Image 1 (cartoon, rainbow, N blue to C red):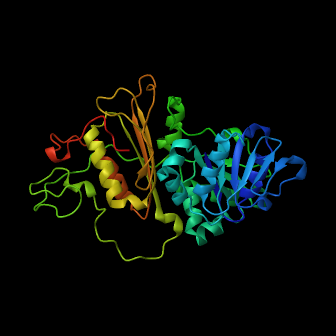
Image 2: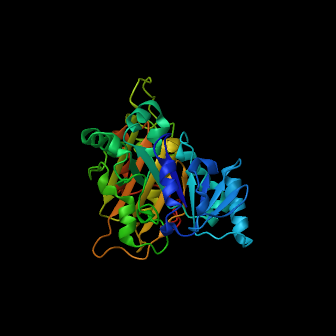
Image 3: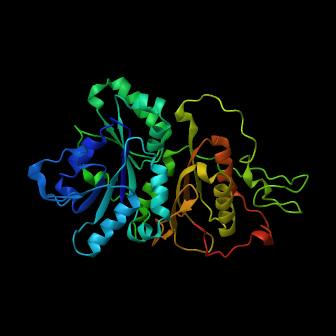
Length: 382
């Protein structure tokens, strides 16, 4: 399943129009708002009803009449009944939509999570109107920040310098998403789909590329200092009557926020990555993740990684949106000679240094983590 998003006027509809006509799309169900939005040519239509259009290319277009979840479940029922056949679903969002809540819904709705595998978010970005959209609407910034692929459109309407400045801005918001240039609205479907590394049996190199930790600002491999508090902490997950070497896991997350001041929307997005050469103790990873999502879960736009956990020979890939995580996927093997954990976190309204210090907790190896935080090694709470 792929989420196709992009702000108003970004060329999303034009891209979709070309994709559904491409034989390379195969059997795809495209969930859209209205058929009229994509201007279907009559000679491409093989069969049509009030709610569904079957194209000669094999694509199936469905309108959203109300709730997205209901529409997707209805699509599943039709497939189970043998009325339609499809191998992939593409959901086109409205231009003003924030993809975060949609991803959240697709993860927490049990029937959808069991039936569909999230592949990625594709965001269209107009070189001509995109800078103004990013200035005016934080939803446009979120669409870029959550993207796995960014499709640049209408680049012929701007100068080379303007295009480069826009690309630099997109890269600052989302360093890890490859940027693809659309040729008059056309992009090869092969570079937009089948991109997730979160699949059982996935090629390990594809998973490492999917995380793409090298593209993000790197966290220096220096553990943060842990000082025993002068008094027992009265907040957080680790409140204890005795000094706790991990009491500073909150790392400033719970400090009072400074008064709000005007900032460009771009600056509200922070991203950071870390690579770890040594395996991570399972209980330390559990504590770090639980603390992060408990304290700032709503502001974690996205998190993904591939991790090496002590005592587990195979790598695990994980992916989360806010406080909801896809079940971890065990991959068959590590690359030869490389067992490096790679983790990327994209946050909203979280200072970069605090986010980086949180990741640095994973570098620590306290002598004892205390009986109150012991966990079962194999039960990783993704």
